[in-house]
Length: 124
Image (cartoon, rainbow, N blue to C red; front, side, top):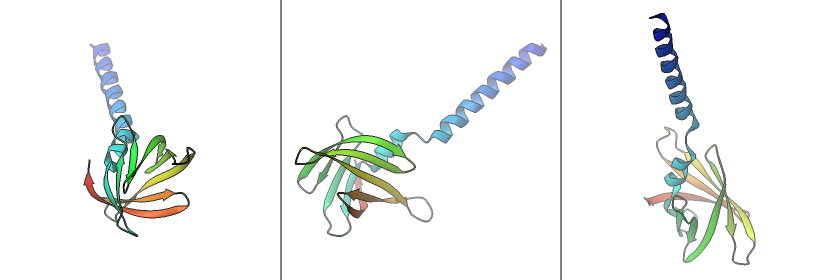
């Protein structure tokens, strides 16, 4: 009887620890799907489609599409390797910038030494 109760306690403790671990990791897949959508660049209104949730990752800026490889996801910052038109690989970043109450975010888009603010128009 004593060992059975101890076994149930250990199982319940292991389950609780697993659930706490899963809850704390934050899952990078959600971040990638959260930013996949149609965004509007603040300085000139250019529409940018970001698709990082499908099999083929890409960014479509205006009428130009570039392939992207997700290199790292950490603390709301997504680092990308992007194949430029000249065949070279460039390092771009997307960073989620949350509003004061933490309910919505814009993106800070850093590419080629340029920083842009992107506002979500529509999720994919």
